[in-house]
Image 1: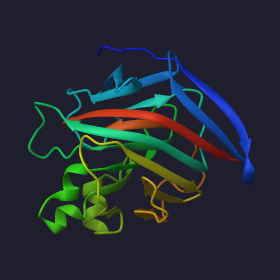
Image 2: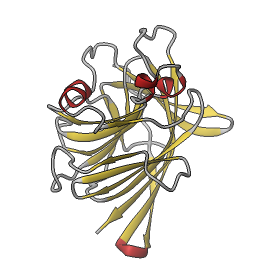
Image 3: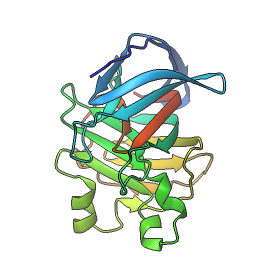
Length: 225
């Protein structure tokens, strides 16, 4: 796999409610690709991180992300702008899958994740629209198991578009995670039973799936003591 290395400069600020704000800008040295190809691109004069899943990984809902080194995240807020495009060779079932993994262990074999499917949001099929947002936990709790065992509980609808910047904000507290999109004050998805429980902590990953050309920028992390 071809790797392009980046440094990340982090600014730490103590803010209210015992949160440590960490604004992360792309540079060189502290990102780690896990089953993905990555590069630093310019988009309208702005540095963005481009991430594509390694095609040798055939299973879905796998650890296919870029992790941010030096982060041990448990509770707080993760905010990032994401944009997805379909690759020219994307399969028919590609939906522009893009999102965030969090509390990733050192071996990338255990984590939580929330991602979006922008293609689904504007199709003329209400069932597919209801699958615009997805939570899953690795290993053992991929989308198809959760959809079968608890339909509607871990998926939701929200309006969104391909090839447009979408702000994802994930608020994590113990065994709960809430996803907010753009400037909405109400969450688009609430997960009250993160499958790995309240005690897990770990890295943060910028995640993509099959058929996606994913872009990330403006990553901010607010950690709570």
